[in-house]
Picture 1 (cartoon, rainbow, N blue to C red):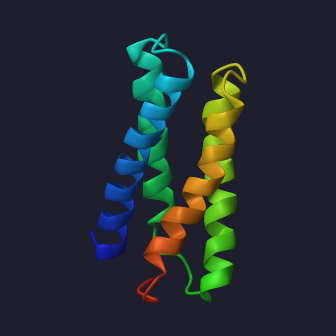
Picture 2: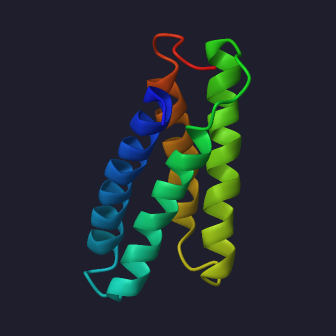
Amino acid sequence: MNKRMTEALIGGALLGVVCVIGVSIRTGFSEPPVYLFSIWYNRVIMGLIIGAPWVKKDRQAAIRRGALLGLLVSFAFFSTSGFHDPISFVAGIFYGVILEGWLSRRNNFR
């Protein structure tokens, strides 16, 4: 596993924790643990997909790719959860940008 993938998986897991905390606070801690695990796992999968060895692009194109991949991965969860949490869906787009922005900060991607 290369450095990009490792950083993306760790970043996805950390952003997943942030997302679980946000969902918990917004819902008054009423979401079941399986839902919270699912939203965390979705962010880890996002890290996996964004961390893949994509074709080298300039930073702006890479960040757009992160937004698109964040949208696609988040939509998968959003649609299977019955369109339950639009805020988490939109946050996934921003998380994709954050992950790709972090990963491309030194042009260290392939």
